[in-house]
Amino acid sequence: MGQAPDGASYNDNGLGLPLIAGAGDFGPHHPQAKKFTSAPTKICANGDIVLSIRATIGTKVLSDGCFCLGRGVAGLRPKDTLDTRYLWHWLGSAEGALAAKGRGATFPQVSRNDLAELEIPLPPLDEQRRIAAILDKADALRRKRKRAIGLLNGLTQSIFLEMFGDPIEDPRYSTRRLGEFVDHDRGISYGIVQRGDDQETGTKVLRISDIVDGHITGLGLKLTAPEIADKFRRTKLVGGEIVISITLRVRSAASTSVTSWSF
Image (cartoon, rainbow, N blue to C red; front, side):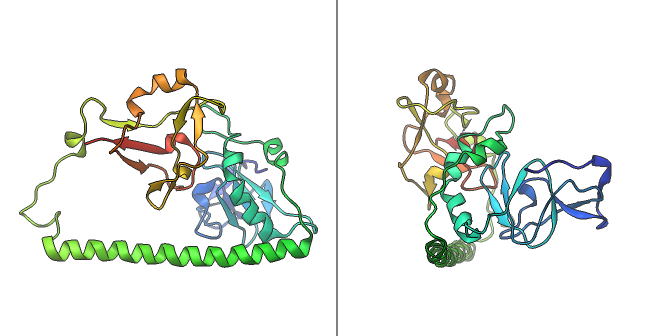
């Protein structure tokens, strides 16, 4: 588990080791530290998995060097009996279970024990590598699909601009605040702050992890107690609302990561 170094050791001139304080220092695949520390505490090595354990629990990157680990992250270095890529993919599948263990009023966080208690299926090493190779290929296809969707979204915007002009620069358009056009009885509704422990019965809670490709999957929805849901009646979805992520981490399991509005 990471440990915050002395604040006086932080610097921007490359003195010491780059510091990974939390998921904010994660790049697409590897760490992208913003600060350095001349008094590193916990250190990860090249090839270690760096896992976010605070706020955006379960986000991960693969270390491509030596970094100091702050208290918002943990470094995982598997033994010889566990393949790193297999562990990487398994952590992705266990993200929801790990996030559900998060505790804390401001930012949910998991502990060393929360990580250690997770149970991982452990086939023989050769089988682990075979599974990991298959999942690596699936990930590559997923990234290509995501890039293709991004290009299509850009094409849609280009077509709009070509047909109707730039709504910001074109004098034919005026701008108004979004709040003027939402349902005044509900407004823009922020999600539940703390949904409490998992329930066998209760009110369904929509999290960012429940939204895939712009649609609600309806699979594995968590439940919150009726008395908690009662405190957030304004957030109840009745149909026709637009639900939008308000965090950087799309797959975040926090129910506070979504907000909605009705027209």
